[in-house]
Image (tube, rainbow, N blue to C red; front, side, top):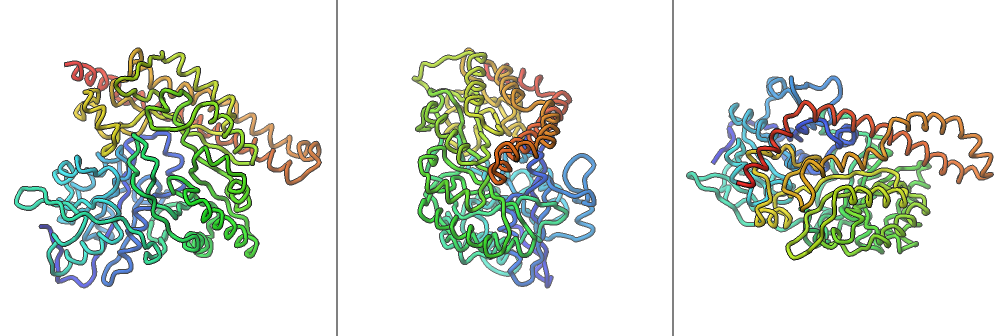
Length: 524
């Protein structure tokens, strides 16, 4: 068991959110926000006597931050400046795991205790982590577990009594008793974003609900939803407004509106709060398509300042929706989307291209036809922004287990964790498609929406503003119409730049050769 120097009076915990392996479609958003999980864990430890805490988000660092030679932060500089006794490593994104292990090995060589946690660390990956520089793996939510673990490491006690961790003892992996998910969220301190050093946070993540009961095959978030009070969520928002002058928020709940009546009550509370303080806030949420059938909910959301909604469309192809355990039909999806747009929401559509069919489903569709279906649906739905990713068989999901049993997964020796970000094919797709085709197809679909010409459209929008207001004879409605068009043009042009940079980074990578070898080994 690895322990701390008990003669010290104060200790430091540094939590690191590892850098993405390369520039990708998430990079733009990552520079404007930060993951909520590391902040929550850091805040819990910061309340402990004798502990100093900081969070380093390697994907969001200002120009004066200590940058490394290749990517992320310069940890040698950080360790010289403010030596850490324990380093926590956030494994929320599987594609960052190679970087996480690189950081873990660095600190372990320095004699620092390393602790990792996050969605990546399903039971199948725990042994890998403990042999890659990680001393302890936290399984599940970390606010209570990390406090118990640090308390024992800095004093006396049996680490085996800490629930929800894994470690090596006498060469064997030890798993302690499972810890149940937190249900009393009011006992947790408000997340303290001042602990995130060097970052420039423009959009602040907040939450009220943990868990999701949709049970999608490809998703790692499972279990009965657990709810904090509406008052607690409003307190988080007001605290950030007062301490950080925050105006933009994203509710990271997997599905906004799971507790319908309480959601409406929260929206009404937030509306009244903004009226009282005389400021207008801007919120984004993730929500199910079928919530469009609830006009009272939509009205409450709009009045509360919720302008942006992210929706998991997944696919406009009915057979694929069934394979994902989705219970909607494409025609309904189209109607619901139009309802959201009519209500005034900016809609971001998240799609999965080339989802693998389950055995027994006789469905074949060429890439060309699939691309056509996607483009037609997006055009008819008039979705403001889109994200088309390839299926990612994440650790701990039913999708990964199914593909593994079908012997379709490419080996990690050929296609490593760094490619598990939705931009690369990870398994052998359904016939008649090829891995190369589905990768090109996802970029082609997004390329239809994100084009250079939107730079000129944004300029036209600026000059057309007074004419639109005059023509519509309604300043409030005219502003909404103009702003939607202007914002859409700006985002689509920015996304075009992002895609161009991603293609440039891809050309420098040797993925095509890795894919060729992976397919060869898979056939063997």
